[in-house]
Image (cartoon, rainbow, N blue to C red; front, side, top):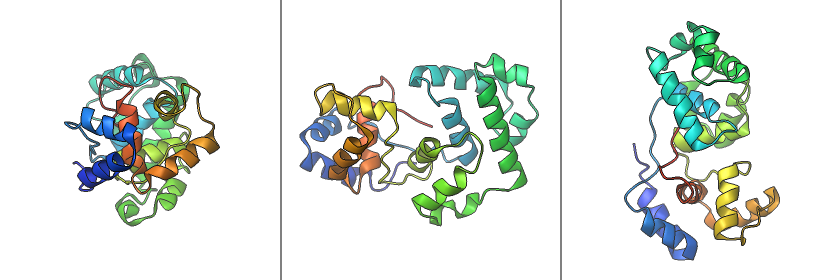
Length: 205
């Protein structure tokens, strides 16, 4: 599912920012898209914590091959040794298990998330072990397709801003927040284009 705002957002960003204009033109054939499965999106975000996109894709591919399906039940019924063989650390196995348990028990208000604010969704998700603000922000961007999320702690975003805007110098968190104001109300879209400028394949969760 592609966001219905994508074309408008891309054009607005391109009109106001020469860097964005170049990126929008270069990557005109691809866009942000939702996989539609909340559990899989969150599980993939946990897998991707603190590792490169390529490494995360590799671990995820092994996990998909090892499990009958990416579901809470499949994760809960898997042995830790099988999950570790996919390349997951003990901590990430613990996090995936806690996420699966929350879903299996119905402890998360999944059906209400589309109507909740970004802050409300982040507050609910960060109550799950291993889900911090960054992971919740990835969910907002890649599952709920929220248009105006700026993940200040994302290393890829920091690197891309350094490359395209600040002469190679990594911006501080405060500087990145200030820089991102120029992209409102389409900060998720700007972030996606900047990620895309770094990676050979589109980032997806």
